[in-house]
Image (cartoon, rainbow, N blue to C red; front, top):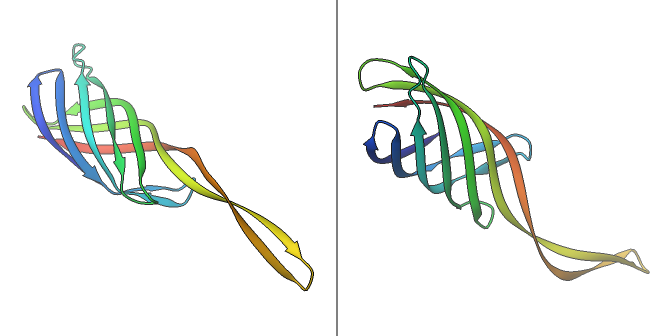
Length: 132
């Protein structure tokens, strides 16, 4: 689920900002992104493909960069309303604490902090939306 509010500069360019709540099943985690949103609709006769990008910050899992490019198709549903179906990727920057664990005599363990590793989680995205 997400919402984006902005301005339609002309028939092919929209720029706005939004927030959302998304589930990535590949890694079993939730995202709560705050983002800027840019979108272009290309009217090719009755065919209306679109491309969009969302760039922002994820508020869950100690935060991190949020980037989500998508492409899709807009079905006209009246003069100023449309249903959008799109696919793409969602990339989230994450920080992971690294520990070295060593076994000690007497069945006890020592955890030694080694630093932070920066990773990128990549998830497939499928979106259905309504614009008006």
